[in-house]
Length: 379
Ligand code: NAD
Ligand code: DAU
Image 1 (spheres, rainbow, N blue to C red):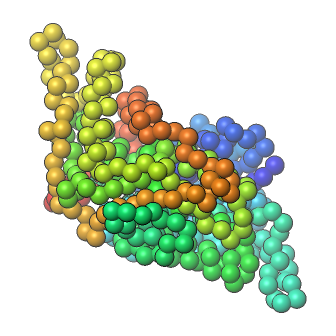
Image 2 (image 1 turned 90 degrees about the horizontal axis):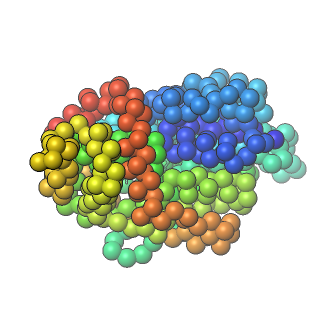
Image 3 (image 1 turned 45 degrees about the horizontal axis):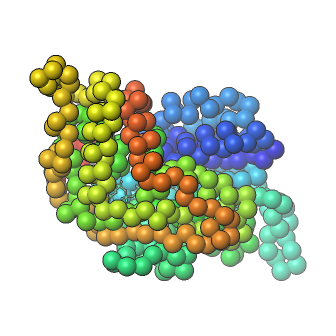
């Protein structure tokens, strides 16, 4: 039985990872540590918490006493650190919060792990680590900066972050590697491209576009919509993390990506077309629409779900042009590959949102309206 500390599992990717792990393995015990910020929703993982295999602790990864207490009580084998402030636009609004959570929080966990896992010193003074432990940092392709029209990020690409978010994630990665180099701490890092799928908070592009269509609102595309992202279905990311935590080599970084580059405009148009198609095939989905114009036959009309909903708005400051991952290393070393084709994943995702509107309403019941006004009112 392995015991995991999984931070940030009330958020998008962490929650998907938690569900994946509990479904795949019977012999794991997972302690979730999450501060339940605006991006964390306990309802998402409430069905998974059973106080036998899965425990929930509300708390901040920056809290030293709490981290020490949890390491002491649960004797973790693995730490998987998802907890972060994750939205680039918010980092432009309030950079300092990103430093606190993403850098200081990560470093606090590294230190708590060091206090708990070191069993002695070798002749050269290096710490000796408890056998089988591992600190895994969930990182991002944004640490590499931005690409031009060609090429891919490999693990050797120099780190060159641009946004406050990516600068904070880069810094965290460097601390993780510093603990590996200085203390010989057993660590791994994954750097993944853009995820999409269930439980994605509707401040990010794909869930925001779906939500706005359902509300009959305009679809904001930053700049001219030519920026490229490399989209990966979230479950494929979870599988990659599981493989790396269990079988990845200590001190190694693994890039994770789907070879699925799309411009933002392509993503938005594809989402519009897919919502329209699904509502044509299954008219019952139209009940979810806020705009309930009727057509000549008295059915809820969907003629207005078309590209005219798109509105080009002021660009993101310092907007990275293109991300694209070369996942050769993780494929060759661990046999990982992106299993979900985008055409399948996007339909699964949209259908999930169409059938989980209660979840959407729950997560936007806090400050979401204020955030939307601040971000988009001025664009
Ligand atoms: P998210 O914003 O959906 O969730 C973040 C979670 O962390 C939330 O549950 C939040 O409550 C929690 N949290 C925030 N601050 C905390 C703190 N101080 N202490 C404890 N918990 C805290 O993020 P996500 O999209 O699921 O991303 C998870 C991780 O994956 C992040 O580290 C992110 O940088 C990385 N990542 C995300 C993507 C992506 O496309 N979303 C891609 C690559 C890497
Ligand atoms: O690449 C991995 C990163 O992907 C993760 O590290 C981040 O945590 C995650 O948020 C994501 O960052 P992006 O900035 O790429 O994701 P976002 O969904 O915010 O934006 C995707 C693209 O769409 C980006 O080029 C900006 C654009 N965009 C976004 C929003 C919210 C729009 O054009 N309109 C919008 O309203």
